[in-house]
Length: 288
Ligand code: ZEM
Image 1: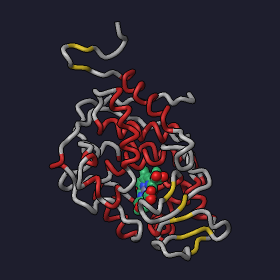
Image 2: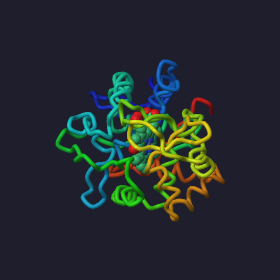
Image 3: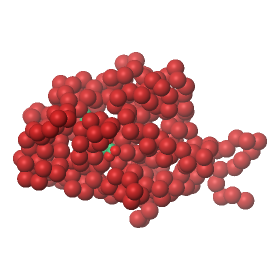
Image 4: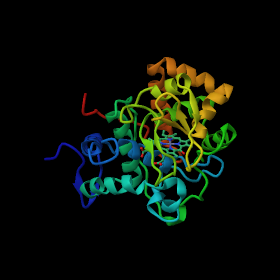
């Protein structure tokens, strides 16, 4: 007999072990030397964030429930350019575990990516249900990197987050890079884009940043190596006094960053989801 979820008349009640199996399968396909810096982890984190960050607390629309990025027009929104890579990658996992909803899968995969890239444990719970095209959110709910702190606050306050939480979430830019064929911007934020660390905050404070001279969208480069980048919205975190306070706290204390990031990223992935159960799972990482 199986130790976990029972199959009775087609209905399947997955257990913690079943979700851990999904985690393990995601963890196994993240590393790939033919892709970017050798890992799909960053783009999978971005998928989980963009699936969730559409939430509007006033109308209670958007959020990770529904996985509406599967459908146009949401899949075609400029902010989601390149995320097909992550959705297609996870399609193989969905085929192997057809009982999981896309919305649970995308958020669980983001949790797996954070943990496998050396980040903190992110408590996660199942219960998201997939929606249809009618639940697609209007364009413009995700942040625009060319803007300033006022825009950041408008976007993230709409989701229900405060200044400290905006700064904590932004630490995810330790991971991955910008692609000219996706956002138009170019380059990574840190020297170790497949490891979650507080380097994003340290580099923001310690490097000298200047406008990059090129034909692309306005972005910053580090003066000393010219190999790293910051978006205008990243620089807003040190231009704004309230934000900068938190950048300084996280630059000094990686444990504090990990604690706050785990808490706020976990809640981001739950925005707008009418969960029936309270219990959260903490997945074993492959390195545990
Ligand atoms: Zn990002 N992000 N983001 N972000 N992001 C990019 C890439 C990544 C903003 C943004 O415009 C961009 C958060 C917040 C914000 C990640 C995670 C999280 C890119 C580059 C842009 C332009 C896309 C490309 O060209 O491929 C803005 C304006 C934000 C407002 C604060 C939050 C919150 C995140 C998670 C918690 C990650 C992991 C990437 C790297 C993706 C990759 O493919 O490498």
